[in-house]
Length: 578
Image (cartoon, rainbow, N blue to C red; front, side, top):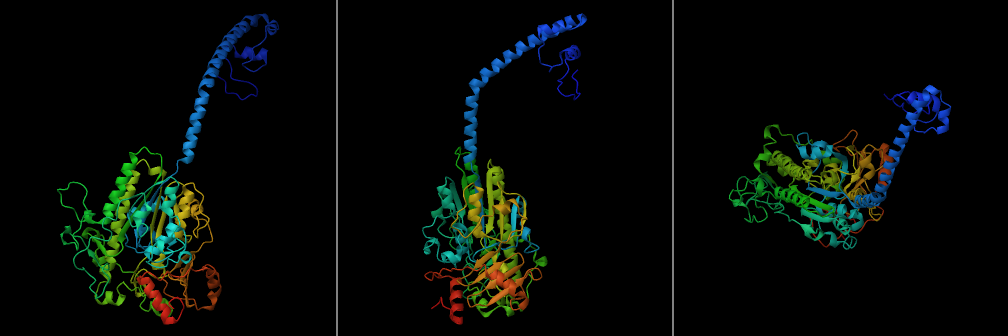
C-alpha cells in the first residue's frame, strides 16, 4: 500500500521493494541508481536491487514513450485550442446582456413592497423586487407623464430641457430635439430594439426598430361614463368594472387592436379586450420568436402598460380582490391644505381631475379607490405574464429587468386627485433592477428615474454618458445598503421643485414660499414645518440641490399643468406668464 507519512523528501513507498530502495539509495523515489552503486550493496540485497533497477528502467522507458506521444498531441492540438479559447473569450467579451424595460402608467406607491396601501395586491411586482434591488425612495423628475418619461429617456432634468408639462414632446425642446435617446442609443450600439404600448409617452413608433402598437391604448371605453358625471369632465376621467362581456358597447366599436388570441370562433373574454393584456402577449410572443433566432445581437425590449391610468376600467374579476365592505381609504387630514402656501395650492389644483368635494358629495371616493387598486392588480398580472415568458426563454439569466412607473397619483390625499404636485403621493414610484450586475435587497437611498439611462449603459458594459444630469445606480445595485449622500429632485414648472432626502421633503415654489416635512414623524406630510427656526439648517442644506440654471418653459403647447402654472404665475405676479 502507499504510505501517508509526511517525512520530508520522501515519495510514496514502492510495493515490496520500496523500503530497501530508500534505505540504500537515499534518493527521490523516481531516481535510478547507477551500476556502480549496486556494488556497494550487501550481497543478499544485490539481486533484489537488480530487479528494482530493471523494473525502473522499464517504467522509465514507458514514461518517455508517453511523454513523446503527449508532446506530439500538444504540438498539433494546442494552437487549435488556443484559437478556440480566444474566440470564446472574444465572444464572451462582446456578449452583452439583454434589456427588458417595463413601464407602468400612473402607478403610485400602492405596491406591496412599498407599503403605500395596506391592501394593495401586486404579487408579481413583489416577486421581481425579491430577485433584484428594489428602491423604496425612487422619485420621478416631473409629476406628469411626458415630462417624466422625457427625463428617463434623455437622462436630463426638466430644468435642462424645458420640458415641464404634458406637452410638448421631445422635439419641442431645442435641447432634446436632436439628442439621441435611451432606446436609440442601444440601437446604435448594436442592440435590436422592440417596443409596444406607452414607453416614451408620444410618437413611440419613431424610436424603435420594431414597434408592436398601442393595442387600443386607454380603451376600451363604454358609450357613456360609468361613474364620473360632472359637467365638463375630462373624457378619460371615469372608473368602474368594464368591459363586462363583449365589445359591442364600445364607443367607437373598433376592436382591430384588441383581437383575442386563440380560436377566432370563441368570443373574447373581457380580459382579451384590454390593451395591456395584448401588449403583454405581444411581448411574450417576441421573446418566443427571439428564442428561435440564431442572431448573436442582444435585444432591448420595452413594454409600456397603460393601467392604472384613467379611465380606471378593468373587468369585474379584478374588483373582486377588493370587497367594498372591507376597503380601506387612504389616510387624510381635513385641514391638510391649511399650511400649504397659496402658490402651492393654485399650482396643484389639477384641472382635469375631479375635485375631492365632488368625490365625497357623490359618494365616489370608495369606488374610485377600489377601481385604482383593481387596475393595479390587473397590470401586475400583465407584468407577471411578461416575466414568466422571459423565465421560460433562454434569456432568463442574461437579461436585465427594469420596472418603473412614470409618477405617483393622489386619491384624496391633501384633498386632491391625480398627479401634478410636488408631494410624496405624486412623486414616489416603484423602481426595480434585476438580473446581471445586480444583487438582491432593498435600497432606501433617494434616486430618480433620470438615473435609469446611465445605469443601464453601465450594466451593459458601456461607459455611462458624462453629459447627463442622471448618475449610474450601479454602486447601489451592488451594495443597496451603502450609506450614500443622494437627493432626488422633482420639478413642476420653472422655479417649483421638490427635494427628497432619506428623512426630509423640501418644496420650493417660484414665488419663494416653502414647505418642509419630516418623514421620521410625519409620513403623510400633514405638518409643514418650514417656518420653524430649528429647521433653518435643514432647509439651507436641501436648498443646495435646487437647479442653478432653469430653462424657460415652452409655452407653445397647451396642457392642464401649464394652465395651472400660468394661472399661479398670473395671480401672484411672477414672470413666466408675462
